Length: 199
Image 1 (cartoon, rainbow, N blue to C red):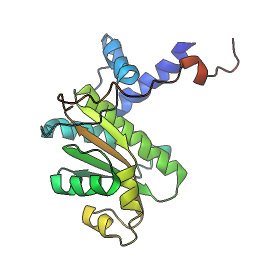
Image 2 (cartoon, one colour):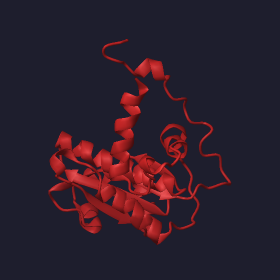
Image 3 (cartoon, rainbow, N blue to C red):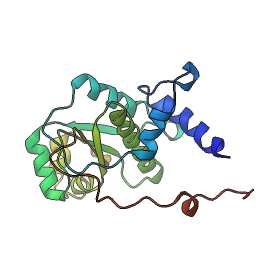
Image 4 (cartoon, one colour):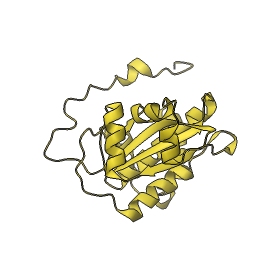
């Protein structure tokens, strides 16, 4: 029964995240699966920059994410200016990392909002596969979206028909702080997964 869950998931991620080796080539899937099942959200980042080639690979994963009817509705805004990141972080009370990525889609459309989430997760998986720490938030995106003056959207080059929906932080974990041990426990598998029919 678990194959019915994991096989489609693996096929999907291999399509949208080309940095992950293909199982058909005989690679051990355990390292990749650990990214999905054991990864922790990072709260504190060092100032060490993200490698430009790695960043491009991460963005390729987002750009090539599968979307409803292949509409690809996103604008992906990559922010590396520390001042802008600090301003947005202070405005929204969010994390600070060397790279902040905003994903914007057509405002209020549930299907496109889901697509924004998929693109965000694709980039997160790619970043973690490359060894980076990550954090997904909505607060900075909400701050940009709710700015009635439109100054943030203009500053970040977000078109008027798009609204920021998700934020992905990427960087290196700050090893001087404990970023993960206080995280809440994950829900038990059997408490949230329902098989129909239940065999």
